[in-house]
Length: 323
Image (cartoon, rainbow, N blue to C red; front, side):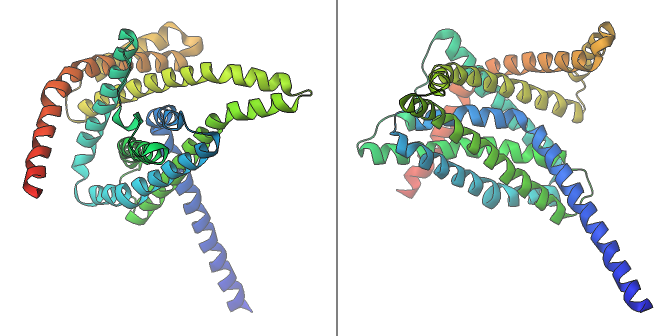
């Protein structure tokens, strides 16, 4: 009997340890996912445009196809790469984060420039094709998955950097998998709700009754909401990108502009002691955003006149070699 009680006590102890590990993994996954909020918001803001122009019956299937591609990007490709980096090239995480952050700044600044200049972005994956609707859907899904890959890479790298040093590789893998699935479900579930909201509003109007007014309001609300979402996504992109680069420079030994931003944040907190935390955070976010916007504007001509031509030339060389 005493042996049975001792066994039960051991089982209870193991269960407590397991529960503690589950809580720890869930907590770290939540923190890692929160760190990637800027890229997540932009992902949610970018995706709805890929279903524009299709019949209502194809909207959700297209979103589901993109979501499946996003999961493959994160779990099959990016998660193993992240674990290899963590195990064998931990030093490369900060530089890769900075490259991703610079890309976010570039994309955000490009959107700001187009908005200020009233230019339309001519994206090949959003144009019609010779194969009709089926070909257009295929092109848009491929274009969306390519865009998602870049944002997913940034999300996974940010999440990896948020995991404390010394965690076993299985724990890192589990945290990254939870982040990947959780963010994908949240983003594309939200996108599916957005793209069907106006159809739901029209359905309520057609049914009539007490909810018809709500349906009309929903139909009127959604175009403005989509514009606000785009603005918020762009702002979050620039802010997060700037923050990543500023912190990365600090970690690599270049303590400006990080130190200057920190001093301004502390000064704002002292000036408004009643809301010290909010004032300090807002100041830091604003200055990181300004840095990100300036960096993005600097990168635009660099990408257009140097990086893109070089990439095109390399593709031409390898394409000719394959031919």
